[in-house]
Image 1: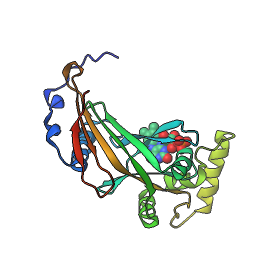
Image 2: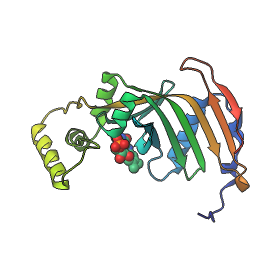
Image 3: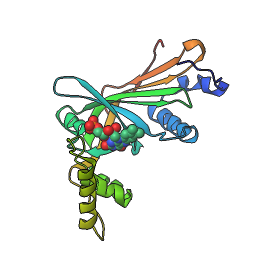
Length: 211
Ligand SMILES: Cc1cc2nc3c(=O)[nH]c(=O)nc-3n(C[C@H](O)[C@H](O)[C@H](O)COP(=O)(O)O)c2cc1C
């Protein structure tokens, strides 16, 4: 795909290469993406592997991010949920076209505490809460009608009052051990900055990588 739109000079800034705290840098890039990205700046691909070692990847939305890791929410019986339960490791990637930036992360996956998942579930729109009950995510669906019927049934069941979080719907926190920042530079002489650590409490070491 050819790129005909000239990129502003500030997109090409190499300033981030001086960073020594990958979480602070990721927070700054997420904040900039929130300003510049037209849709879902928090969208990220999450890769898992199945029992045969075959990789699997799909988009999810980042819903929480702090020094413990990056959290997304899903159905634990989904394909990704089952893959994470049997092999709790994952890779993530963000790509912000408006910034010509990519961030890759690799690490372990753990479920968030029930109270944390309950608190997030409570913030979701009511219909999204009903959808979490009605969708047997990643299972075969005989028809769209069957899904709409399930939505109608749960709408009636939870007619009034608070909707509890389904037991098979929660958050996974990816605790990164590797975080790589990539930024486009002219003539594909891009910048890459990689941080690695031996464990969640270990210090980060930093390296530049050839593009
Ligand atoms: C932009 C975008 C955001 C998405 N966010 C989520 C999410 O936060 N959680 C989720 O379970 N699925 C999300 N999905 C749907 C997943 O990509 C995927 O279709 C679904 O989770 C089933 O994946 P699985 O069969 O590998 O488990 C999103 C899809 C897109 C395109």
